[in-house]
Length: 315
Image: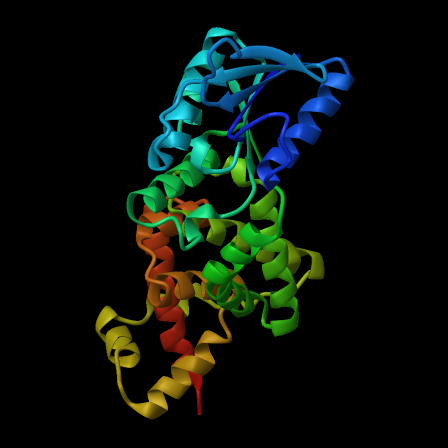
């Protein structure tokens, strides 16, 4: 198998985390008989192609200016690798992943190894930070496989989206302890299947879809009985009655509404949470629930009727 590695500074070198990983991976793959080529930064007169420890080394052109060095190198290395038809093009660090989209467009199989969320480091500001964020999005959307080497990305996703996901799950299953465990499971699944995120929705919507599926699976395992209501009761209410009952600032009515919300089915609670609290639109909710937009609108209308009936039953 022919493998190209792009993203490190030099080889052989152990001056940084990326370089250590590339060295260990390249030499071990070469020892197994794989045809490995690493692309180093910067050309040197008379010394641009050589072989070290069973690994082919090609030095790629770049500018010496630090602000352009890594960016230009990753593009020239990518274009050079495309001419040699490697089976796998393996990108290291998220900044050099920007030209990965070119390899993808040419049908090459790509792997992205994320060594850390570099754009969060103080030294990367302005354009550099935005460029590295672009590399993160491209790796998530286009790489055939995404590999992470630390818990930093998992912590980042958990800190950013965790509270909202926990709120959704606890609304569905009721138990904070179980919801906390399912939230962790949800992010581990997202973390290990990051390459399946293709940008069809926002990242938060994709996470909510995983969370919803995890909660439904947990409820099915517990064989939880769901509350059922007579549809004829819902249909007997007019839209005006529903609006008067639900759209109120009366404290007693608000308490009744909160109590009524706890009696909804788990999937109904999830829908209410996403639409009214997280302010997801109909299209996003349809994606999360695997429904049509028309079905979502119907469900929301039926839930409002159901809440109204539950509030009327409160003593």
